[in-house]
Image (cartoon, rainbow, N blue to C red; front, side):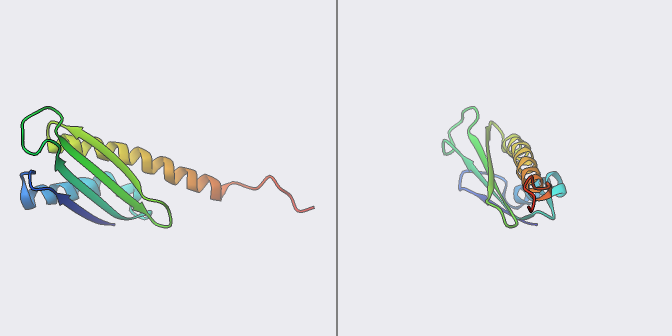
Length: 114
């Protein structure tokens, strides 16, 4: 699973923030390792450096193999909180998406060859 992190000019942290985000995403999404090929994390400051509540945004897009991308968004006062909240949403969404795919492929058909 490839994890890419993108930030805008108003996010402080540099390489250490990128490494932490990659490690956090890899840890939280480990159970989907065989299903997800790439994860992209976008970190931004919503109000461009002005102080305010819930002004850090994290958008995470996961690309499961052979399926449509799944995305999650969260906003918080701190980047770490936004990343954690978006990862929580993404884990739930990926779990639901992969479970639905397995259900459709794993069930027996109700049609019989007559």
